[in-house]
Length: 40
Image (cartoon, rainbow, N blue to C red):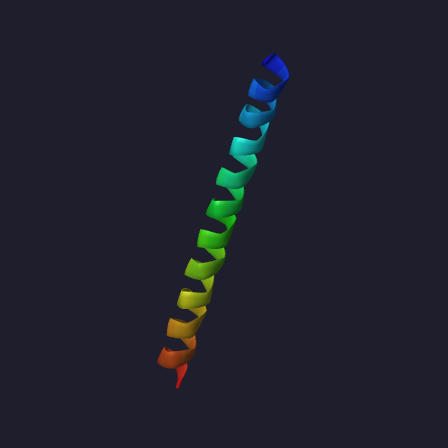
């Protein structure tokens, strides 16, 4: 039981970090798109 619990707590932060990273990438792509639109 303890092993499963520790595994869950270890995996959760990883997925949260990945979600944050993907969100940052999406925001960066949107920002880049806006920048290129302004330059035109």
